[in-house]
Length: 70
Image 1 (tube, helix red, strand yellow):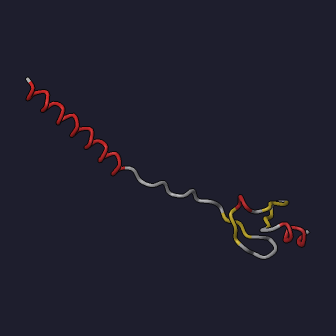
Image 2: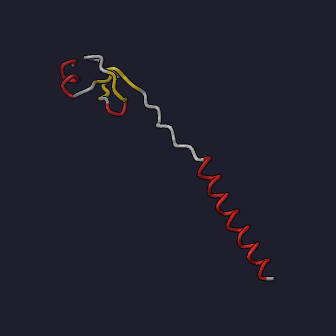
């Protein structure tokens, strides 16, 4: 009976360790989100859309360039 319990415990530990190894091997790092790049209407510098200053359908890299184009 004791031998059966030991065999069951070893099998359980093996299954848990194997499952952990398999799940860590199948995880892949997330790819960075692709972000749209837009050119500054004044100087042409490409920058992420979230960092650009949008004005009337055009984008600017800085407040100064927005003001100069206006």
